[in-house]
Image (cartoon, rainbow, N blue to C red; front, side, top):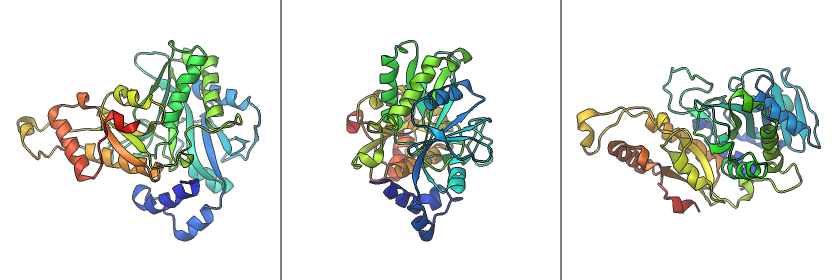
Length: 350
């Protein structure tokens, strides 16, 4: 599937996935002729963001691009790096704003950011974004909007593996843990999106070796080094299986065990906290039990946006069975069957 094919699919699905961005046939004819670019976003107020951005800009081939609403940009082949001085999760729709200002269509967005964790453990992380479990009217604590998730960037799985390889080669491991994270936070975007982060305290956010590793990930991963780009779904031959993770903790260990294997593609990863299920009490053993909560909404949004990001791929739900109680798992499996969402075993993704 070519990149044009992706946006042809997106134009058909945009009405129910992205109601504020309707793409008519005439608009599509104009849009598909536009140059397709990758947008990298960094903020100067975050050392774990501007550090990797500066290391990346020190590599060959960059030159100044057009300023977008007072934000400077830099250009290298089909890659655009945009810097701003605000919160990384609060600047919404930078993909749309870039297109409106330049006439170029954003094929994907990659955010460079810091990671925080209660453990304070040094980490290099990759994850998709969204808050699909929030109810209408709820205020997202770190960007986004209720019942929303961005299409996951198809590079997430391949770049997680590449990041591990780079970290190993740069002697950052085992000091730094290389990990996936579950889908969480904003900002709002329409294009397939991923966050790449350095954690988890200021000491590590400022580490130049960590910044260099992230810069190298982007440099190699986008093929700016002259090699083949890593994780380009349009060149994958499609017809492959994509993991939609359901359940587990924030660092999704059982899903990550699968994604470590070469060739595995990954979509949204819904941790247990993104699947709110109200305990039905004494009736939980009842057949055909109605379990309230926004867990259905979260699964449906995650599935639809993952499917949109991987044209002609087959999205399979992978359930972290050990993270659910019996009544929870039964409710989830029943809903997946109702929605014709297939469940995959680990071996199905290899």
